[in-house]
Amino acid sequence: MSLSRYAAAELASFLTAIDAALHQAATLVVIGGSALALGYGGTAATNDIDTYESDLEAIEAAAERARAETGLNIPIANSTIAQLPDGYEERLKQVPLPTKKLTIFVLDAYDLAASKLLRGNQHDRQQLTQLHELVSLDRAVLVSRFRELMTGFVGDPTEPWWSLRHFVQETWGELLAAEIDELIPRGVHRGHPTTQGEARRTRKRSR
Amino acid sequence: MLAYLVTSPSRRRMLELLWRHGAAGSASDLAKQARVSFSSAYRELTLMKEFGLVAVRVEDGREVYSAATDHRDAELLRRLVESRPSSAPPDDPACAAVRRRVRALGAPLAVPAEPVPEDQREEALVDAVRLARRDATLARVLPVALAAQWKTLDRDRLERSAVRAKEKHTVGFFLALTAELLGDRVLRGWAARFRDHRVKTLRPFFALPSARMGKDLVERRTPQLAREWGYSMDLSLDSFQSAFAKHSA
Image 1: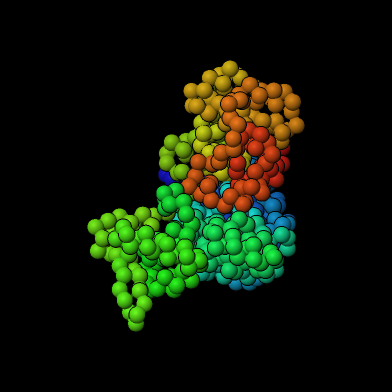
Image 2 (image 1 turned 45 degrees about the horizontal axis):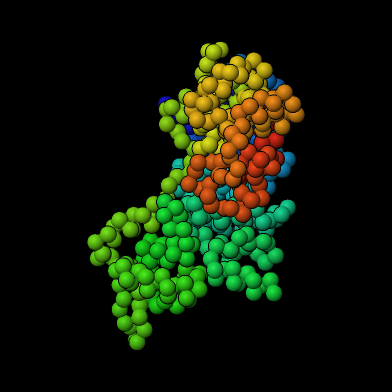
C-alpha cells in the first residue's frame, strides 16, 4: 500500500469512529494537510485535523471516544488564522466516507492550493506540488483564485505573491512565471529582478 | 532540469517560448512575449540561428523566427524544455519505512508507526535527517521526535550512525535546532560535537530542484541558526516553532 493511502486511511478510520459515536448530525470542513490527504490522497503533514468554522462542540465527546477506541490521538481544531477565498463554501468537496451522522467536506483543490500559497514555505509548496501531481491543477484557475483571495488578504502580501511566482516557475516554467510579475500589484516588492531588462525597469521605477 | 542547465532566465524564456509554446514572430514580437528586452531576444535568436535551432523566413520584409523542428536534436531539446523534475517528497517504500519508524519515535506524521528496537533508534533518526533534506514536512516536525528521544539516546552510537551516513553536520544542525526550540543548553553542547567546522559558506539545505529557485524567499526566511550552520532554506523559524509548540506537549 502506498504511503498516501496509509495516511488517508488512518484519518478516515478516526473520522469514521467519531461518526459511530455521534448522537446528532455534525459537519466538518477540513483544510490544510489533512484536506490534501483525505480529499486528494496526498501525504498529510501532521496528525492533527485543521478545520474551518466547524461546530466542534457537537463532536467533542464523540472525538474523545474515537481517540480511546482507535488509539489515534488526533487533535481537531478550528484554524483561527486561515484565510480562504470568497465563496469557498459553494465549492467544497464531500469526502466519500461511509458515515451516517458526520458530513465531512474538504476544500476545493484550488481553494486549498491558494490558501497554501499564502504561507508558501518549502513544505507548503511541496504539498502543492503533490496536489498538482494528483489533480493536475490548471494554472489560469489557480492564479485567478489566488488573486481573489489576495483582494481580502490581511497581512504583508509580498511573500504570498513570491510563493505563487515560485510555484508557477517550478511547475510551468520561467516564461509563465514571468506573467505573474505583471500581476503583482503596485507597492508590493517584486523580489530580485531575474533579467537585466527587469533590473533596468526596476531601477527606472525607483528613480 | 532546464533551470540547472541554462542559468540565464532570458535564454530559458526564449527557449520555452519557441520550443514549448511553439511561438513564431519577429525578434521584437518574441521579446514582448518572453518579457525580455529586444537586445536580449535578438542576441539569443542570433545565437540560436548559429546553432541551427531557429528557422528564419522573411515575411513582408521582416525576419520571422520559429523553432527549427527539423533539427536533428529537435525532439531532445523539446523534451528538455518541457521536463519538470518533481519537487514532491519521495514516496518509495524505503522512504515510507523511514517515516513510519520516525513516527514511532514521536514525529507527528500521518503514517502508521513502525516500532523501532531500542538500539536502532539512533540509526532511524539519522535516516530521518537524511530524508528531511528531500521532505520539508519531515524536516519541520523532526525536532519533535528528537526532543522526545534525545535524553535516552546513546550519543556515541548516534555519532557513528551519522558519520556512516555522511550526515554528521546535518544531524548536528537538527540537534542545535531542537536545543533552540527546547531552550536546552546540554543538547546545544551535544550539537556542537557534530559540527563540521570546515563549513563556511551557505548552501541550500533542501536537496530539491526547487531549492535553488526563490532566492528572495530563502533570503527572508532562513533562520539565523541555519545560517550559522551554513544552510539556507525556505522554512522559517516560525514554521519550526509552530509545529513544535503544537506537537511537543
